[in-house]
Amino acid sequence: MAKYCKGCGVALQNEDPNGLGYVPTLDANFCQRCYKIRHYGEVTINMQQGIESNHTLEKINKIEGTVFWIVDLFTFEASMISRLNQKLPGKDIIMILTKRDVLPSTLSDEKILAFVQERLKEEGIQVKEILICGYLLKHDEESTRNLSRIVTAIQKYRCGKNVIFMGVANAGKSTILNRLMASKDLTISRNPGTTLDLVPLVQEDYTIYDSPGIENKHSILTILQPKDLKTVIPVKPIRPLVSQIFEDQSYAVGGLARLDVVVKGKATVVGYFSRSLPIHRGKLSNADSLWQKHLNGMLVPCVDTSLLTMHTFHSPMKEDGKMDVVIHGLGWFCVSGAIQDVYVRVHKGIQVTFRKAMI
Image (tube, rainbow, N blue to C red; front, side):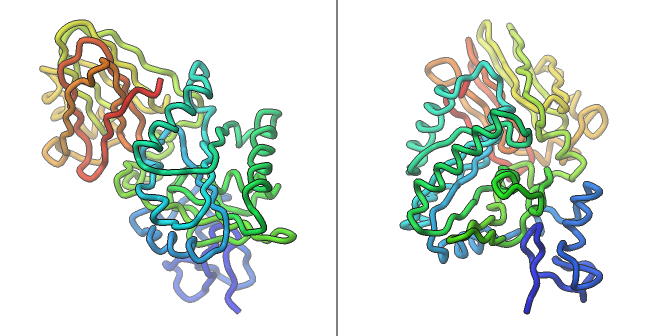
């Protein structure tokens, strides 16, 4: 009988040291990859090796159960799954918004809820309920309160069926489940693609399934090296970087993305990124020479070594004079005021969304 890793769910094997699920001996509970992540913070797989998302959704469809969709508030756009109801026909979906504690405390839950409801309406996605959660890595009253709300939702919506936790990679599925199960068996790290197969967690009269992260090839997280993920993914509340501008400006997000703002008067640009990620601001007229000279030097982390391999997105300013410029997986800028045009340069294949401002 096949044995499966308790951390990521992959079948264990002792024949191919470079293959998934390798263990020196088959009496181990965790594959070698999970063991290294848990004890040394090492990672030996990335999203390019892929967990095929369609394959994961097919497996979820075969389970008679209620879906708890875990969505990272900080990387909300990258966490969206288009046509979700069509991909999971007949499934009741509960949305759990994680990493609330990373967003500014000045942003109210009511405003977050209104923003999310509007975005779901725009995407044509229907859910039964939305829960806002945070502080899940802590063991305090706030964390306990959030977990209790999730337990209540499971009891309310399970209706005698099983429960499936799903979402894009790194949204926080395994963190929630480890707290709910009061264990640390599921492998957790900041690296996308940590869970590799459905992990069944058998309860008294039903089963909870932890599913692999749904692959999002348009998120910058999928192409970054593990060491750079630690820079990009925030673990502390983000501090908005506010600047008033009166002339055309350019903002370098490390060497990963560039925002160019063309103004026709006074404007405001606010950056929402990890504290560890350097943001460099300068005149737009000097931006190209700065990138040519300092990309992969001062401008790090980076994926590209030349502007020629980057793609440019463009949007005129929205009519209400305020919008978010979201770089999927990385963070966002909120721009407002007398702005004429906005340009974003980013690695080819990474998505940029221009949306109504969240904050």
